[in-house]
Image (cartoon, rainbow over all chains, first blue to last red; front, side):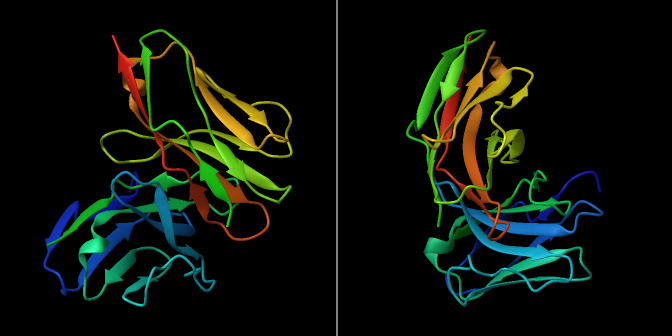
Length: 114
Length: 115
């Protein structure tokens, strides 16, 4: 596609439920990132995928968070047993390989946990 | 982990004027990269400008330029001839040249542009 696509745009869920957030990166981009943006805060790194390498999961805040990337393309971020503190905007970004490459971001998923 | 500090939560500038957004960072590395990203209300972050630490020359992109002071660990963004479309959140970000690919972001500066 023309840009990074994320779905859903908004998600409201009840505390304790599981949610799945989807990211469709730009075709040909081998690197994919998930970030979390809480209200009034900067972006918090969650996880990074690069090609077929093992992902860098160092930013995941707890074992309730997991992510996978199938076929080197679409990625899904799963949050199990959601808590109110999980409410945030979840941003996905992709880039070509290379440490100086710019990231292309999606418009994010606004998650609200009631 | 490297920390990025943006000390100005909000800034305001008149159309056609110049504004400077500040950013400082803390690192012991010599090899790294610095970025400024813009986030409009659409939430989609857009790269404004980037700088490699080993380059002494300040990066410039049209109306946007940086003042990179490596010894002071400072990376400010100057916006010249400000336009209404420049109104957004601006985030400074750091990426290590040695360990990992994650960008560390500051908390952002909200820029208001007044007519």
